[in-house]
Length: 205
Image 1 (spheres, rainbow, N blue to C red):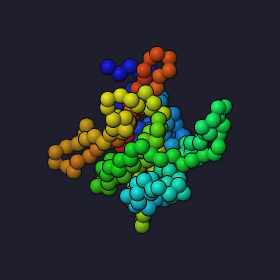
Image 2 (tube, rainbow, N blue to C red; image 1 turned 90 degrees about the horizontal axis):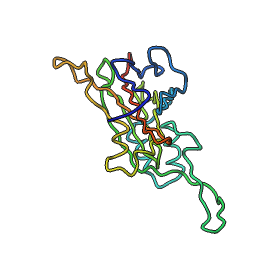
Image 3 (cartoon, rainbow, N blue to C red; image 1 turned 60 degrees about the vertical axis):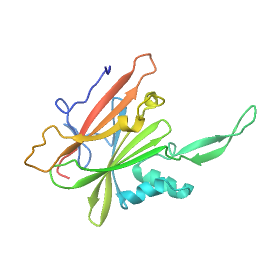
């Protein structure tokens, strides 16, 4: 059973990925919906497979550029390097290496356009960048992220729990399959576990 102060279900509050990401009223550039942060920005991308490959690169500069493309801040893209001494001290910083990466394509809107959903786990942080084909390339239209530390160390896959692409409830058998993006973001710290859930679709492209 999930306990939480909020539950963003499609039936009660439809959050839409559009231009920019919007709910029943336009969201701010960055919006905190419970434990989930939604950032609205449009950034030109190469093919999503190239972004994924660069996230797996052993080259720090290549990996850092890919982290910036999905919308990760400079602070979140780096970790301190500590000296193995007592007392210890910070020697410098290193670029984060993602623990898990997933790339999915799905029709999230009303036409046949397939959106790319690039999900990344980097230590305790989870990210889901959404991009659409645009002119001669791609464009990221939103980033959704969570400090999902309470899912780590459990028996299930934390990234799979954070982001899923599921059939839309209003899909009809006589039309092409439609999907929605489901994000689950956890919080706690007071002895009460909270999980907020958001369902997202694309409106108008």
